[in-house]
Amino acid sequence: MNDEGIRARCFAALDVLCAQHGIDVPYRGGLDAGFRYGPTKIPFLSPQKGIFHAAAQTGPAALSINTSWKSPYGDAELDEGYLYAYRSGALDQPDNRALRQSFVLQVPLVYFVATRPGWYRPLYPYYVTSDDPTERRVLVSPGQMVGPFDERAAAPLESPIARNYAVRETRVRLHQAVFRGRVLRAYASTCTICRLKESRLLDASHIAGDLEANGEPIVSNGLSLCSIHHRAFDNDLVGVSPDYEVHVSRRLLDDEDGPMLELLKTFHQAPISVPTKRVWQPDKERLAERFHRFVAVSG
Image (cartoon, rainbow, N blue to C red; front, side, top):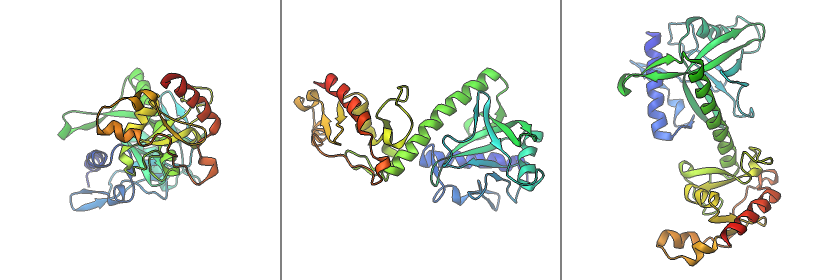
């Protein structure tokens, strides 16, 4: 089979899955279906190991790599990309050969970053831009898709400035995605205020902002909120007290502007839903600091 054609078909199939599911794609009901190249069904990745080379490929280079959700933010980050480790064991075992051949041949691959159990963010095209067998790791860097939408082709980013910018943008989004994945998992994909269970409409909101000294990306510094309540919380129109009670700002309570506003008002002084594990529950000290700001702003 044409290895270049398999990669192009893989990227096109991921475009469709991302349009269906959003930028994070589930393995079950999504990636597990694989993609078709002619009559052949080809997997996107192997959830059991990090480096994947499909049996249908004629070329020796890997089709994809993946990172476990258990690692804090994926692989070690550099300005130029991400350091990705060889598989343990012999240097020349098949998986390591496939990874190293991706550097030799400079072919594009998919970098699947797990954002929570069973969910991956597909980053593509990525290229292996350096190989260090002594340290047993490679550097993977972002490329770009060029050309008209129905005939897009993968290409490297030649400019170091463009590559560094792409890495920074990806890093921010991945940090947000991992934080969101962990918070939504803790809250069973439910809005802590209104109990909405549609994950595509849920966000992870920081209690203490990520630029603040105590703004660590940990579950106890997050709240699972639907898009409306997230906006309201960020703009101090809705607050959560350290005793886990919702408060609607005085300005909204005094306003009369249609059914949506009336719906927001119904949650005033209602309890939020919190995770069952104590370690995941919202940190009361952070909530107290944030609620103090809400009271000062909302009156």
